[in-house]
Image 1 (tube, rainbow, N blue to C red):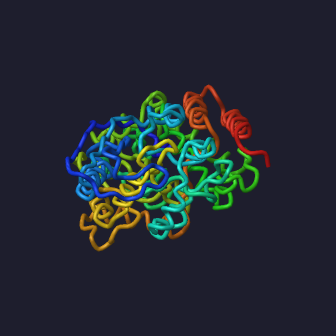
Image 2 (image 1 turned 180 degrees about the horizontal axis):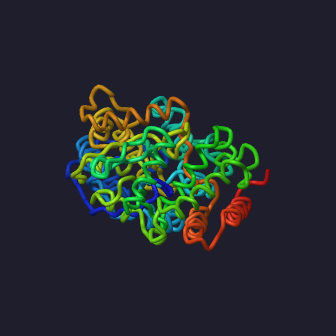
Image 3 (image 1 turned 60 degrees about the vertical axis):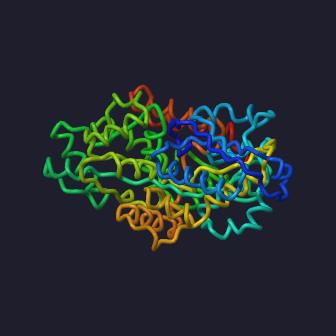
Length: 432
């Protein structure tokens, strides 16, 4: 979203501090740590989310290990960082460390512009690369053109994410509809809900959710080479191929059949998530970033599963910790990243409903959390992380939102929709 995670979240600002003098240690391009009294940190995770809880604990751990240094956590929102990052990072007001969205159009673009610090020496020295699977590490590295998958390390995720189908088991029981295990059973269940006057799928046309439904449908007819062409430019992407055509036509058909409400064209992701939490929607297809919140807020019996009938699903390593080129306290930033990669913080993240990348699996005691991590391991082992549809080129997210909305309202047919995507993609992608 989005990339991932593509949702607007704001957080309460917190300033935590200490008063003792810190032991000197050499800075890496950012001056000596003995002169640094503040680590400026930006991120946009909700305080009750798995990441928010884990990173608050990491702040405490950091300050305990760095007497005399305080962490100044500055309140930001996802869209705020997304829109202002290039300007802020090119100024003297850049933070020391920040969470930033991964992918060619975001972190890749900043790395290409020379606004991010090359983390490769620290990654090697601290062994972070050995803690990440190949699929998760893909979004950490960018070449000279800002294309992910190779080159220098410009960011590091300390969690992962993937998409899944969430089911309100109580609604399925109420309407005497069997929970689906196959794709055919899923469509049969949606037909049954429609006949009973219930819109089966929670959706958000104004943000990332609608385009991810369509992308998942396309992925169900695709393979790894298809993803690599689209995301990594390893060959030409044809938006009128069998997979994209199936995705667009099936999505439009689902709107016509009432699986997806036309009224959701202007709905935001938060509204869709809340409709599921409030027990109004029997099914939601979205990311693991909702999982911890559903654990905490949903009062009904629910379950989740991978999209039936597909080896691929949207997902990746989580958003990245990046260190701006103009950061004043880079060594402290590296130390903070290291703490978020520790077993203690990784285990906490896992038990709070996140997907850790370096946890002790035996330390994850919550049953629901273990199911979540098991699902990710299944996807990861089969190389099924297909990233997100808006990643390949700069500005593609906005194109996907507006064009998918037109597809939902019926003002645009699948063929014209795919034409628009092809034009925007070809304009931004490197020439083949």
